[in-house]
Image 1: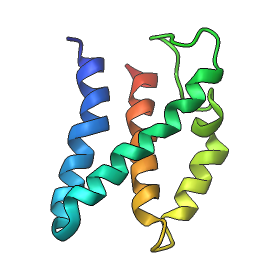
Image 2 (image 1 turned 60 degrees about the vertical axis):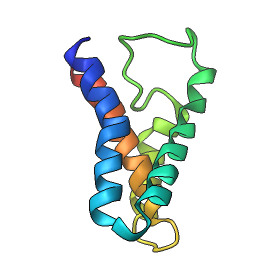
Image 3 (image 1 turned 180 degrees about the vertical axis):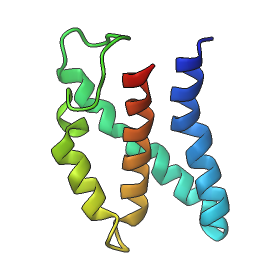
Image 4 (image 1 turned 60 degrees about the horizontal axis):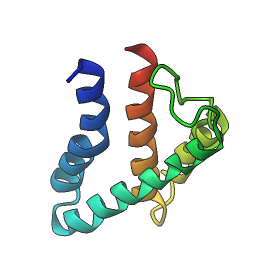
Length: 102
């Protein structure tokens, strides 16, 4: 396994699990489930050709990974009803952003 693989999937699964457990302890499992559901944002990868390119930076390439979308996710963090979803989406963008630098 490469460092890129470990960091990428660690930020997709381990970091959200830790954040859910330590910051949302009473309902951590539900929060972690929501964090996992935010990975559906990757459905925009289906619009790309080729579908998978291990060397492609997802940030600002796919529509739901664009700077505009990330700006919306930042705004959503300000509202209590969308905060957990926004945290999950921003964690996802951080995980995908790591790939751009490794």
